[in-house]
Length: 47
Image 1: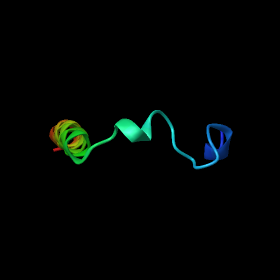
Image 2: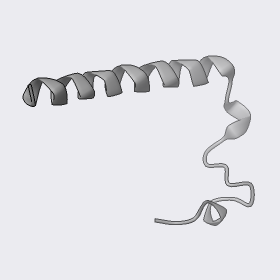
Image 3: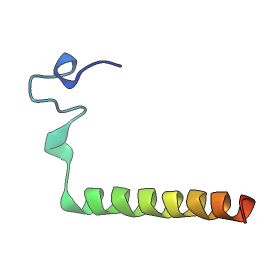
């Protein structure tokens, strides 16, 4: 583990100037779908 200030004074990682609301929404959607799938699998194994 490294603190964020190791990467940059602002704590940003990568190229924040290339970010957009569309990219953020797409990432959020993918993460939410994958998390839901994982939780469904855990639930099925423990049912």
